[in-house]
Amino acid sequence: MIYYNGLIILYGGIGNKGLDDDKFYQYSIENKQWTIFATTGVNPGCRFQHTMNFFKQDTLFIFGGKLRKDNESNYEIANDFYYVNLKEKTISTPFIAGVTPNPRFGHSSSYNSNFNPEEFTILGGLDKTFCALDLYTIRETEITSDKKWVVEHKKMHSNLNEQKDEIYETAKKTIINFKKQLEILDSKYMDVNKK
Image (cartoon, rainbow, N blue to C red):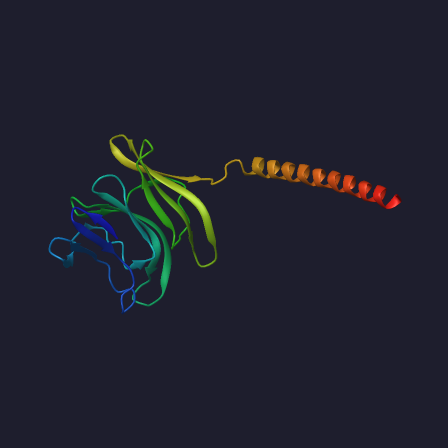
Protein backbone atom coordinates (compact mmCIF):
# COMPACT_ATOMS: atom_id res chain seq x y z
CA MET A 1 0.00 0.00 0.00
CA ILE A 2 1.34 3.45 -0.92
CA TYR A 3 0.18 7.07 -0.67
CA TYR A 4 0.09 9.06 -3.92
CA ASN A 5 -1.50 12.49 -4.58
CA GLY A 6 -4.29 12.16 -2.02
CA LEU A 7 -4.87 8.50 -2.80
CA ILE A 8 -3.99 5.32 -0.94
CA ILE A 9 -3.20 2.68 -3.57
CA LEU A 10 -2.97 -1.04 -2.90
CA TYR A 11 -2.39 -4.12 -4.97
CA GLY A 12 -2.83 -7.79 -4.19
CA GLY A 13 -3.28 -9.55 -0.90
CA ILE A 14 -5.61 -12.27 0.28
CA GLY A 15 -9.34 -11.68 0.37
CA ASN A 16 -12.01 -13.80 2.03
CA LYS A 17 -12.05 -15.98 -1.09
CA GLY A 18 -8.28 -16.37 -1.21
CA LEU A 19 -6.07 -15.15 -4.04
CA ASP A 20 -8.83 -13.85 -6.25
CA ASP A 21 -7.92 -10.30 -7.20
CA ASP A 22 -5.42 -8.80 -9.64
CA LYS A 23 -6.56 -5.17 -9.64
CA PHE A 24 -5.18 -1.95 -8.20
CA TYR A 25 -7.49 -0.14 -5.80
CA GLN A 26 -7.40 3.49 -4.74
CA TYR A 27 -8.90 5.14 -1.70
CA SER A 28 -9.61 8.87 -2.02
CA ILE A 29 -8.87 10.53 1.29
CA GLU A 30 -10.95 13.55 0.27
CA ASN A 31 -14.02 11.57 -0.90
CA LYS A 32 -13.54 8.67 1.54
CA GLN A 33 -14.30 6.18 -1.22
CA TRP A 34 -12.67 3.09 -2.75
CA THR A 35 -12.52 2.74 -6.54
CA ILE A 36 -10.46 0.75 -9.03
CA PHE A 37 -7.18 2.36 -10.12
CA ALA A 38 -7.41 1.36 -13.80
CA THR A 39 -4.10 0.51 -15.48
CA THR A 40 -2.95 -0.70 -18.88
CA GLY A 41 -0.04 -2.94 -19.82
CA VAL A 42 1.25 -6.09 -18.13
CA ASN A 43 -0.78 -7.44 -15.22
CA PRO A 44 1.27 -8.67 -12.22
CA GLY A 45 -1.34 -11.34 -11.43
CA CYS A 46 -2.95 -12.35 -8.12
CA ARG A 47 -0.22 -12.19 -5.46
CA PHE A 48 0.45 -11.55 -1.80
CA GLN A 49 3.45 -11.04 0.50
CA HIS A 50 5.12 -9.02 -2.26
CA THR A 51 6.55 -5.52 -1.93
CA MET A 52 5.37 -2.36 -3.64
CA ASN A 53 7.51 0.75 -3.19
CA PHE A 54 8.16 4.01 -4.94
CA PHE A 55 11.01 4.39 -7.36
CA LYS A 56 11.46 8.08 -8.14
CA GLN A 57 8.53 10.40 -8.64
CA ASP A 58 5.27 8.94 -10.00
CA THR A 59 6.71 5.42 -10.41
CA LEU A 60 6.92 2.31 -8.29
CA PHE A 61 8.19 -1.27 -8.29
CA ILE A 62 6.33 -4.44 -7.44
CA PHE A 63 8.63 -7.36 -6.67
CA GLY A 64 8.23 -11.03 -5.76
CA GLY A 65 5.67 -12.53 -3.42
CA LYS A 66 3.43 -15.55 -3.69
CA LEU A 67 1.64 -15.76 -7.02
CA ARG A 68 -1.50 -17.76 -7.78
CA LYS A 69 -0.79 -20.65 -10.14
CA ASP A 70 -3.49 -21.26 -12.74
CA ASN A 71 -7.00 -21.24 -11.24
CA GLU A 72 -6.06 -23.43 -8.29
CA SER A 73 -5.42 -22.46 -4.71
CA ASN A 74 -1.76 -23.43 -5.21
CA TYR A 75 0.81 -20.69 -5.54
CA GLU A 76 4.36 -20.24 -6.77
CA ILE A 77 7.00 -17.96 -5.35
CA ALA A 78 7.98 -15.15 -7.70
CA ASN A 79 11.03 -13.01 -8.37
CA ASP A 80 9.57 -10.83 -11.10
CA PHE A 81 9.71 -7.03 -11.31
CA TYR A 82 6.90 -4.76 -12.44
CA TYR A 83 7.42 -1.09 -13.14
CA VAL A 84 4.31 1.01 -12.56
CA ASN A 85 3.98 4.55 -13.91
CA LEU A 86 1.29 6.08 -11.72
CA LYS A 87 0.98 9.25 -13.78
CA GLU A 88 0.35 7.38 -17.04
CA LYS A 89 -1.28 4.39 -15.27
CA THR A 90 0.84 1.87 -17.17
CA ILE A 91 2.61 -1.30 -16.03
CA SER A 92 5.61 -2.87 -17.73
CA THR A 93 8.27 -5.47 -17.01
CA PRO A 94 11.67 -3.80 -17.30
CA PHE A 95 14.66 -5.40 -18.95
CA ILE A 96 17.00 -6.35 -16.11
CA ALA A 97 20.70 -7.08 -16.40
CA GLY A 98 22.96 -8.57 -13.76
CA VAL A 99 22.13 -10.91 -10.92
CA THR A 100 18.45 -11.59 -10.27
CA PRO A 101 17.29 -12.20 -6.69
CA ASN A 102 16.00 -15.71 -5.95
CA PRO A 103 12.20 -16.08 -5.77
CA ARG A 104 11.03 -14.84 -2.37
CA PHE A 105 8.15 -13.54 -0.27
CA GLY A 106 7.92 -11.69 3.03
CA HIS A 107 10.98 -9.63 2.12
CA SER A 108 11.56 -5.91 2.65
CA SER A 109 12.19 -3.29 0.01
CA SER A 110 12.71 0.45 -0.11
CA TYR A 111 13.68 3.32 -2.35
CA ASN A 112 16.91 5.13 -1.53
CA SER A 113 17.26 8.60 -3.03
CA ASN A 114 20.57 9.25 -1.23
CA PHE A 115 22.58 7.43 -3.91
CA ASN A 116 23.31 8.66 -7.40
CA PRO A 117 21.78 7.01 -9.31
CA GLU A 118 18.90 6.28 -6.95
CA GLU A 119 18.49 2.67 -5.87
CA PHE A 120 15.66 0.32 -5.04
CA THR A 121 16.79 -2.22 -2.43
CA ILE A 122 15.48 -5.68 -1.61
CA LEU A 123 16.43 -7.34 1.67
CA GLY A 124 15.86 -10.87 2.93
CA GLY A 125 12.73 -12.93 2.50
CA LEU A 126 11.75 -16.58 2.38
CA ASP A 127 10.95 -19.29 -0.09
CA LYS A 128 9.70 -22.78 0.75
CA THR A 129 13.11 -23.91 1.99
CA PHE A 130 15.20 -20.95 3.15
CA CYS A 131 15.29 -17.68 5.02
CA ALA A 132 17.81 -15.23 3.60
CA LEU A 133 19.45 -12.01 4.72
CA ASP A 134 20.88 -11.03 1.35
CA LEU A 135 20.69 -7.53 -0.10
CA TYR A 136 20.05 -6.61 -3.73
CA THR A 137 19.90 -3.19 -5.34
CA ILE A 138 18.32 -2.19 -8.61
CA ARG A 139 19.06 1.06 -10.38
CA GLU A 140 18.17 2.60 -13.70
CA THR A 141 20.85 3.23 -16.32
CA GLU A 142 20.61 4.61 -19.82
CA ILE A 143 22.20 2.64 -22.63
CA THR A 144 21.72 3.92 -26.21
CA SER A 145 18.70 5.96 -25.12
CA ASP A 146 16.83 2.85 -23.87
CA LYS A 147 16.28 2.59 -20.16
CA LYS A 148 17.90 -0.51 -18.71
CA TRP A 149 17.90 -1.74 -15.16
CA VAL A 150 20.85 -3.31 -13.37
CA VAL A 151 20.55 -5.52 -10.30
CA GLU A 152 23.51 -6.02 -7.98
CA HIS A 153 23.86 -8.52 -5.18
CA LYS A 154 25.51 -6.73 -2.28
CA LYS A 155 27.18 -8.61 0.53
CA MET A 156 26.04 -7.55 3.96
CA HIS A 157 29.56 -8.21 5.29
CA SER A 158 32.03 -7.78 2.47
CA ASN A 159 34.95 -8.24 4.83
CA LEU A 160 33.48 -11.21 6.69
CA ASN A 161 36.76 -13.19 6.74
CA GLU A 162 38.60 -10.16 8.12
CA GLN A 163 35.91 -9.80 10.78
CA LYS A 164 36.18 -13.48 11.70
CA ASP A 165 39.97 -13.16 12.02
CA GLU A 166 39.60 -10.05 14.16
CA ILE A 167 36.98 -11.72 16.41
CA TYR A 168 39.20 -14.79 16.75
CA GLU A 169 42.28 -12.73 17.66
CA THR A 170 40.32 -10.65 20.19
CA ALA A 171 38.85 -13.78 21.80
CA LYS A 172 42.30 -15.41 21.88
CA LYS A 173 43.83 -12.36 23.64
CA THR A 174 40.96 -12.28 26.14
CA ILE A 175 41.41 -15.98 26.96
CA ILE A 176 45.19 -15.54 27.40
CA ASN A 177 44.60 -12.56 29.75
CA PHE A 178 42.07 -14.54 31.81
CA LYS A 179 44.49 -17.47 31.98
CA LYS A 180 47.29 -15.19 33.26
CA GLN A 181 44.96 -13.68 35.86
CA LEU A 182 43.90 -17.15 37.02
CA GLU A 183 47.57 -18.19 37.34
CA ILE A 184 48.31 -15.08 39.44
CA LEU A 185 45.28 -15.73 41.68
CA ASP A 186 46.26 -19.40 41.99
CA SER A 187 49.83 -18.56 43.01
CA LYS A 188 48.57 -16.02 45.62
CA TYR A 189 46.17 -18.64 46.94
CA MET A 190 49.03 -21.13 47.24
CA ASP A 191 51.18 -18.54 49.09
CA VAL A 192 48.38 -17.82 51.57
CA ASN A 193 47.89 -21.55 52.27
CA LYS A 194 51.62 -22.06 52.90
CA LYS A 195 51.58 -19.51 55.68
